Length: 284
Image (cartoon, rainbow, N blue to C red; front, side, top):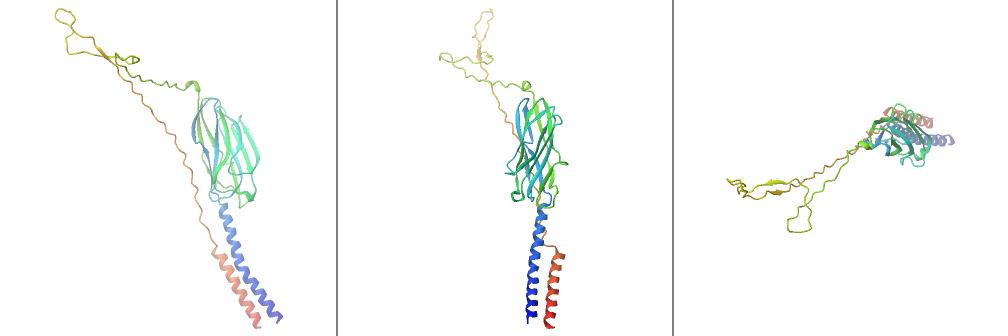
């Protein structure tokens, strides 16, 4: 009797382990799916004009897609003869992260910045990962490049896997302040009729208008009237310059892989064999 009770107990334990095994396999697949590289980096603003000695800030934005991010190593290159790196700070995407490396090399035109957070604080989505302050030092155009071959985005999943799939660069024009054109506003004056005091004379070139009366007779004596000057109004046109709006890059979502068929068949087959084995044991 004790032998049969023990056999039934072992059978129940083995049957209960089948759904547990299925759950663990599916959970592992979900973690591997999230670890598939899908993260994109971009710079904002993408294109902008500044003046010499002007200080400005650009952000390294991140879009993780399906990834959960815990660390980042960002390497940027720029032209040191046009731009000068002033400061690099942590963005708002990984709150509470630790800065592991922060280096600005204006001789080589290179910025290295690394930060890390714990797995419990892993983040998913988009936002500002790093903020960098530059100063224009000379006229010209400098491209700021995210070095994709050296930059690394780490997350949950396989250790050491780089989740970065693409990075967008930016370009900045530094202009000499003295070469900028000076815009002088044009004032349009309204002419005041003669006889109504208090008005200003219009600053327009008068256009003479003659009347139908003869100006000279046959003897050369003047019989005509003086030409009346008609002021020509000045029309000022205003043009509006539109600033392009950066288009965020949408990451492609990966489909759920589900449970692999071979693993599922193996687990079910194992359970059936266990049931048959214990049934024969009980019959003996």
